[in-house]
Amino acid sequence: MRLIRFAVPIAVAMAMVLPSVAFAHARLKSSTPTAGAILQASPAQVEIIFSEDIRKVAGDYSIQVARDRGASVTTGPAVIDDTNRSRMTVQLQPNLGPGRYVVNWHNVSDADGDPLDGAFSFYIRTQPNTVDLANDAQLAQIGAPETPGAATSTAPASAAGTSAPATSAAGTAAPAARPAATAVAAPASSSGSSNTTVYVIIGVLAAAAIAAAGAWWIFARRSA
Image 1 (cartoon, rainbow, N blue to C red):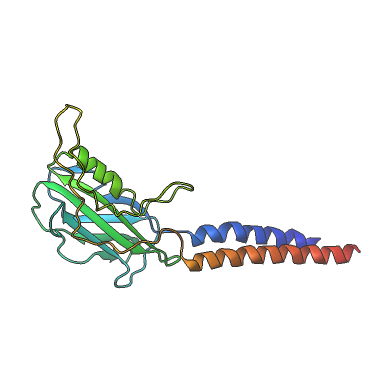
Image 2 (tube, rainbow, N blue to C red):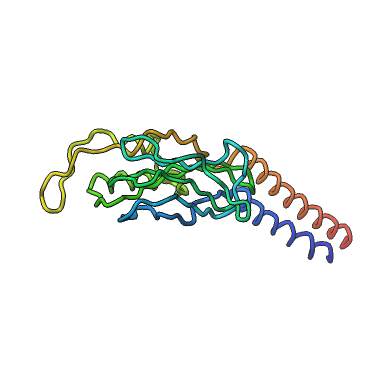
């Protein structure tokens, strides 16, 4: 009976905790500039804080910033803060002109090795129009947690298409749809957890079941 009191709670705790760890991703926690920010001056850099540490291995992390329908405006590769590996920055060219700028980021979680991509935009001395806001909403879906049962689109967010001009609240036609910046092709992200994650969960559940069954068998023999 004493064995059951210890074995069963431990097995249940493992089954509940380990899957949540296995499904972890280093998601965007905050950024400077923030998504959709309208700035009056050109920023010196883009800074992103993630929800957990990211792996500092060449090719496993990046931030790329490009002007909408234009070229990259970064001055070098992204840098991970050695004192806080959840922080990543990239320097920008000075005196950026008015317009919409698209940020694409990529990382690999240091906790479980799962990759993740994301994107957002900010504006410099420019008010977003209806099409800009629609494109921003598409960017926000990159790397967003999936809702069970929700249909997922396989079209990249950068493919805004060439839809008819949107009409503003004032009744005037907004400029034709502008695709989000396509100068940067972000690495394909994992739409869910990796196969390794699935194996970990199966192993944990199996171990929990075996532990519970073993404890019950011992108890049954002692009670016989």
